Image (tube, rainbow, N blue to C red):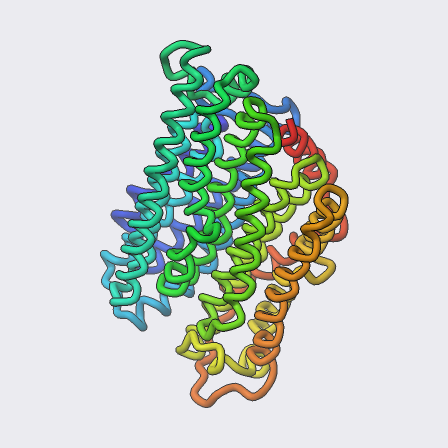
Length: 485
């Protein structure tokens, strides 16, 4: 219990301090410091899980198992990388947009709130608190998306708030139905919302109520994931907000929303069998993959392009969990981890390039290798990895997903390959134009210190594609078995 509280405290205690003193270089240092402490606490928690296995704490209100600890580690790494990148990035954005000190404090405080709520969502055992944490993450990121107070940013923030608010209302209704199904067996009280207790009686839960509950939660949390046709908010929010916000929206928020659906899927599989939830996940996942792939072909804004790439990859992960089985579930988890590390790296590189060139238009971003070789290499490697090129973890996960599809649903394989091929065609030619060639005149060269986390994260992704550490393999295998029931 102490380590769980330490993780949450390290993340949460920075909120008031950053709200009061989170401006300028002092604020950036505090931001990095709190996220460093948070990552260290997460590593200590991971060591305990490695030694003792999954456990619950706090009267059952908190839980750490092999599924949650993998995503908690990803949150810690991406959180620290984003804090590191944010230092120089926000100093430039402050000068460009003439942000007040109050607005910079708001940025750091809301960012820390988002990270704290994401960790709470992953560490809680209570499905009600999971919903509360997702709502808190939504409210904090609405303020981050609208940070610059432009007409575009305000419109994107309102769209994000309204669509995700309606989605979370659906998820709340699903949570209420889940409690309704559980209390008939477990009686009234908070224990009827504890996931471990629900999992123990999942075969006794009412099938009809659980079916409706899952549909509501899939629609609700699927809105946060960006599953088609619930993804209208995502490209606008990514394009309008700071690139550091885009990095964590793609790298953390989408993962945690999918995590919530996976927790419910385990319960629904026990009540109705595997086919009901699996078919829905396969359908929404494949539709998202295809729609996002074709949408990339007509994008002119570089941040919107990679926002649709996030939809594509989350659709692919959702499809993998719909296929089910230990191999596909393992591949889905590996895809989530690799995508988080890679996509945040993409947005770090894109954010730096947009600042240097002063435009988000793909046609104006040219010659990155010439005006900033380190940035050019960072962007090129990150994009190649996000396209699933070897030796990245995404190459391995996509290979395993295709293999699982051939075994379980071979008739879906052509559609899966079509979606991946169209997505490749939407990004690769544009990456070549942005990296090579002669840059436009007037390009400002900035410090590339903030790009260093990109190479660290890409190195981790390369390791995942070549030699996954045994501990991580065991955690993901156990998590895959848990999801398979």
